[in-house]
Figure (cartoon, rainbow, N blue to C red):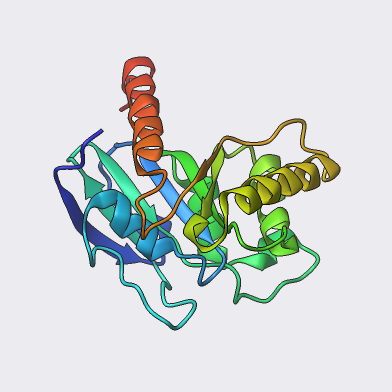
Amino acid sequence: MKINTAEFIISNSEVDKCPKDFLPEYAFIGRSNVGKSSLINMITNHKNLAKTSGRPGKTQLINHFKINNNWFLVDLPGYGYAKVSKKTKSVFQQFITDYFEKREQLVCAFVLIDIRHEAQNIDLEFMGYMGESEIPFCIIFTKADKISKVKVDSHIAAYTKQMYANNWAEMPPYFVTSATEFTGKEELLTYIDEVNQEVFKNNSEF
């Protein structure tokens, strides 16, 4: 897929105020400072589509970007700076929970993980919530340029082992990316394109 247009549409904290267009949506979410804005700018060929900042947690709203006039990229706030409690829903803001549970246009979420670190409980809890809620998602490992290819492979193997230990039957689909080296861009866009084709073919509402 080639991205020809990427247009900011709206920012808000209420699902009811999200765009009414019935187009497939792909939500990007992860812990604060995981490199989400840089990744979004990389895959959309825009330097400043998503605002990057040295201050973690800058994204505080649901941000909709219309891509090629036929699907939405949704930039969601990071959940790493929210208060963590025993209840998974307390890990992130309530309006994010509302988005995932109410937004009919959502076809896939991308959970961003910093490949440099071991599996974090907050990420595992969040993905557990996604699984329990039957929300389709993929993992995007970010910042692959920061470590060697050997370490990337070993970290993914360790992450897979941790997922199985947390009672996952299989590893979700995943992508290895680097915003600075454009690693994983084509694979990610091809995946979105293939899902879009299936959505438009099989769902008359889209």
